Amino acid sequence: MLDRFDHAILRVLSAEGRVPVTELARRIGLSKSPTQARLKRLEAEGVIAGYRAMLNPIRMGLAHVAFMEVRLTDTREAALAAFNRAVMAIPEVEQCHMIAGGFDYLLKIRTRDMPSYRRVMAERISALPHVANTSTYVAMEAIKEGGL
Image (cartoon, rainbow, N blue to C red):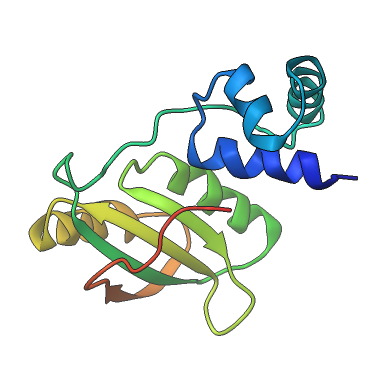
């Protein structure tokens, strides 16, 4: 069960993951020792899954974002597992979600430009196991990205 101090820790760290524990403690209104203990507990319980650098994809030349609906020819467990394993190997696929609805998966794909996207779609995604067809939606602008 997370209390208000745990939520405060998570809010601060989600915005600024490298904040020193003393500064974190000051911001949430606790002393250093209980803040450190809470931080270790949140890490041990898997609430905090890890720390990483947040990269700016646009500065990396990856400004083109497309969302792709994928329908499979087979949705039995073995086919789903084969698709899941194969899609993990495509670095341009930023996110992959299994969907309950009119299609099977929703992919977020990030590339340099439309020609790069077309190559990824034609050569990599269309060749994934059990892909029947796809539909693409190109993002014009990101209004909100990020997590909690």
